[in-house]
Image (cartoon, rainbow, N blue to C red; front, side):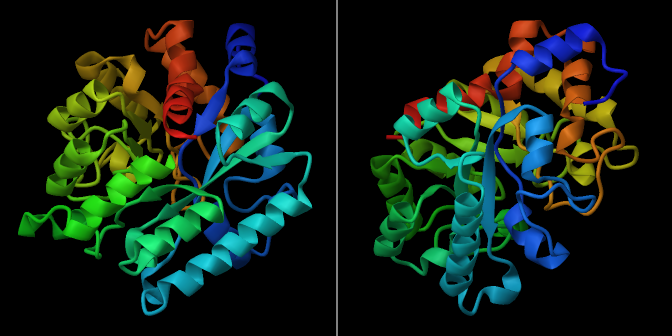
Length: 327
C-alpha cells in the first residue's frame, strides 16, 4: 500500500471488503511465465498483490481468444485446468467460491476468494449440456458475448445489425438463473442487453464497463442502460481500461468522473469494481496494478462519497449480488 495514503484512507481500505469482478490473469500468466502464488513485476494481479491490496474476492475470467474459436471448448477446458491447479497449489491462501457456503467461508477467513468466470459464450458450442458441465467444473458467471457475434447474441462490434439474443441465448440466460450463475452483460450489443435484462429473473452483472455519457465508447453503457441495470438490482464494475475512461486524457480523475456520474443518475448501489487487469495493455497512471487500489479509495473519498458509499463501491454491492444469485 502506498505510504503517502492518509491514515483515514488506510483504515477505510483495510476494513473494506473488496471485490473485483473482472481480470484476465488466467490468460496472461502462461504468456508471462508466472504463477498466481508468486509476486511478479509483470502483469497486474497475483496472490501477494491481491493480499497487499486487501482484495477479498477476485473474479478470474477464462477468456477464449478468437484464434481458438475453431475449438473453443477445448481451449476453455485448458484454462479451467490452469485455474484448478492454481487453487490446489495455493490451498489455504486461495479458496474457490462455488456457492453461498464457500462465500461465507471466505468472508470469515483469511484466504482470498476466487470466482471462476467465462468471457464469451462461444465455448458452449450451442449446448445447454455444456453449460451445466461448466457449472459442475466451478464456473459461476458467463459473459454472454465478447465483441463478436456468437450463438447466444451479438457483441458490441455487431451493433449495426440491431441483433440481440438468439433463441439459444434466451435458453442460456434462463438456465443460468436456474443454476445460480451470474449473467454478465459486458461486451453485448445494446439490443442484447435489453433482451437479457428482460429475460433474466435475477439481477445481472456488467463486469467491466463505464458510462457512455462520460466516454462515448461502444463498450460503455448509456444512461438508460445504467438506470435499468440499477432498477433491476444489478451492478456495473468500473473498468480501468484507458480507452473506456477517456478518449484523450485517461487518468484516475476521469475514472472518478464515471463513478460520480453513475451514482448521480442511478444511485451508488449499482457501482462496483471491474478492473480488467491483465486484460489491458495500458493502465491509468496511479492504478498500475491491483496493489494500487488504495488510491481509488482515496479518490472516491475526495470526490464526496461517504465512507459507507465507498465500501459499497469497493465490494459490498458485488457481495449483495453474489449472495442473491449463488446457491
